[in-house]
Length: 178
Ligand SMILES: CC(C)(COP(=O)(O)OP(=O)(O)OC[C@H]1O[C@@H](n2cnc3c(N)ncnc32)[C@H](O)[C@@H]1OP(=O)(O)O)[C@@H](O)C(=O)NCCC(=O)NCCS
Image: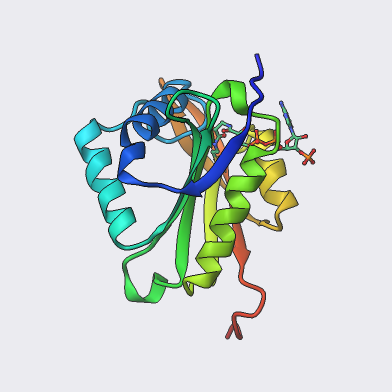
């Protein structure tokens, strides 16, 4: 089933913690797309979102505004690496509740992340996706991500291995490569 109603893409706030936790948990429990198979406990999510909000990190939510109080139906984040030589890089994670896929919300979330990542000085965004996640890969390709490699047995669900693709996007004006 697909749901349509107005959806706002905006930076995450502390008020979004329960909704973000629920959305993450739902997508994780599909055991198909994300590396985790359930969301971490809500207090860990709270700490994670608190850090994100206080440091103004790149983390957006998609909120269906017709639901009472607004329902978090998806998220996307580009979280920076901490080590100095990797500090130009952010790792992308994203997901939408099943009923909200296939209507362009992924592109809106991703574009918001890319714009803010570049504005904050990152020059590279990277991700990995299960090689059979064609919808996600199509979206990344459409926004300019390039394939950088294949990890054999990159993920394992219930003892079954899956290859993953590595993809990356470079900020266009970000200087020279040695
Ligand atoms: C991946 C995800 C964020 C994409 O967002 P979305 O709003 O659903 O993206 P869309 O379906 O609008 O567009 C993705 C592209 O895949 C295509 N597509 C849609 N359904 C598809 C399907 N079942 N199989 C293959 N391609 C599909 C679309 O046509 C579109 O390509 P186009 O722009 O060339 O037409 C979302 O589907 C999702 O949350 N999936 C589950 C979680 C996930 O995979 N997270 C990413 C982990 S790396």
